[in-house]
Length: 135
Image 1 (tube, rainbow, N blue to C red):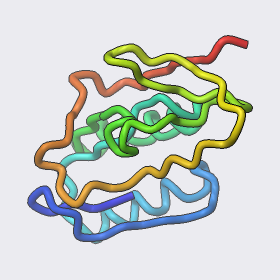
Image 2: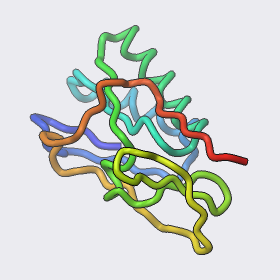
Image 3: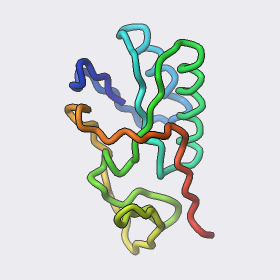
Image 4: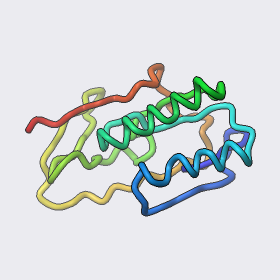
């Protein structure tokens, strides 16, 4: 997670804990120590539960504290690399279509906070982009 001031990254947070354990404490710390006016999250694709949990938490903060919640595609912050779905299935984006593809070997795509969010492609929709792979 990152904190941006005037569109530039000024602080980062990392953790190996589960989203459900660490996200709220980090967000609350940021709200208490910074003047937060917007929150941007990757709305998918990815872990269905992590996306849902993040969206509900950020939307609650938006309603109760008036801090705008926006979303962007996970592909915008990982170099358009495949995103883990389930097992050896990964989400891929071909043109404007998101689908799943099977990879024999694990793909180690990293999500990287951009140094600037001035050109970040923010989605018009902030609701989660749930794309469930076929079973």
